[in-house]
Length: 225
Ligand code: CA
Image (cartoon, rainbow, N blue to C red; front, side, top):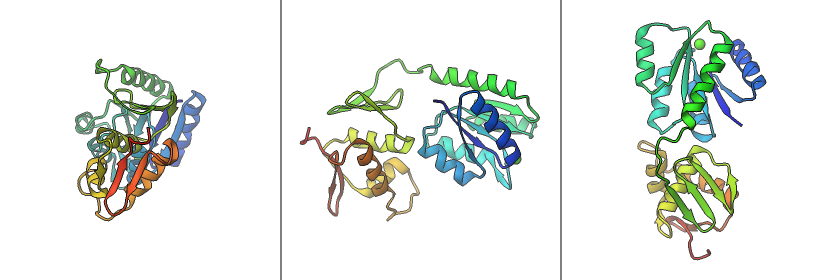
């Protein structure tokens, strides 16, 4: 199922969009501010983002810049009453894929969404790049993970964490090192977010895969294969 994140601060418009998109077979999640939108975009499997620019004092362009900076790759369609050329240029420069001004017709939005989803599903790199570990296969191109042939549903962050472990099998990786690699520069030291996400991976892939090395960090175990 295709999952669309709707970033919009007017509940009337959210209701209108959700109703139409769900009737067209999409799963939708609304977010009314930048913090909420960032959390959902980075931690769920989002296929497309609809982005309003005037968000109750917050700027949707800042959100876009931030998300692209953190590796968010799904197509973004800006949906806004702001129709100045500066906003359009800034939007495209920051990584938007399309721009539609309000008021808009739902039919037009739907056609644009479908066009974007088609383009984004065309693989841009033909070379196959996959990592394997036992029966776990991680496809870097499609960003899909399977274990024993079964597709495992991972968020973008969980995927990157697993990828990091699989690139360093049997090595002890410290929490700080994982924070730097997966969450990026500027993350609060001492945060327990790594432990939380290792817990998520264990829940989805089995408890023995990632071993806790007391006082040092975590290790992707190969001996148990
Ligand atoms: Ca608005």
